[in-house]
Length: 178
Length: 173
Image (cartoon, each protein chain N blue to C red):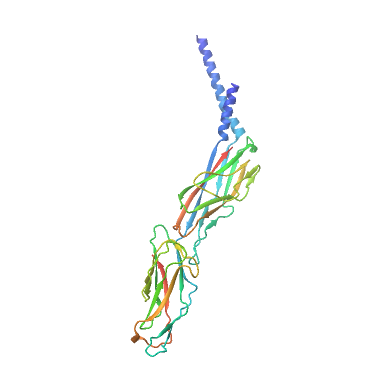
């Protein structure tokens, strides 16, 4: 009987020694949806200047300093979101009569993710113009030489409509939307 | 014949009594000598990333919790003696909604309260969906502080709420 007692005791003890107990807690992590963009190196104006030709019969000379702006953005979407697009337009002021403002978007430099596709060149008006399509979760990198290079070109479309003026200031607005 | 039958009944009763005593005694001794182990987890980790303020940047690659975000305890009832209470923790996660690009890490940032010893688990280790050894000790140890870290965060991961359960398993050794 003592032997049986001992065996049962040993068996019981081993069973308790090997016990497993579990407990748990939650980890919740939230990633926000985000769309943010800006121009680099800055938002300062680009100045175009019309100068008369030095040769009679020649076209007006249009000069401008270094004018490339780099469009940087970060775009974080949820699983159900449709891709984003970027639009640009003249938001304030008017182009002088007989003058056009052409915008050219180059290919993206740097960055990661679904950076979208540039449409090339568009003539800016007061109506929003699509300039980059199909942007998914992505980021361009920050600063010059990251993102999309944007160049502006002013041209005279109709000399007959040109009127002498001191200066025309126009403001360009960029919008990212779905 | 009747006497023989009575003796059989007596013998059966005696065996039954002894068995009952054995069970009671065994359970008592187990309780006294082995004690009951307990596991306890307090806290959780909820984190929401702040929006990016500079266009073109990605989110930070990693985010880290407070050093004592969760407390873990391995204790035993008095009896066998705390001294013989040797234990280890293993850890894994059970995803509720998770992205494969996100990696969750954990480490022990303190020793908690108790005697004996505690060892291991002081460097960040990834919590996978398979159970892995975390750290071990001897004697009851309460309120062991744990810190968490998530790596692999990016705007390339769809926005939303991600959740997983971190499961601790206490093994009495």
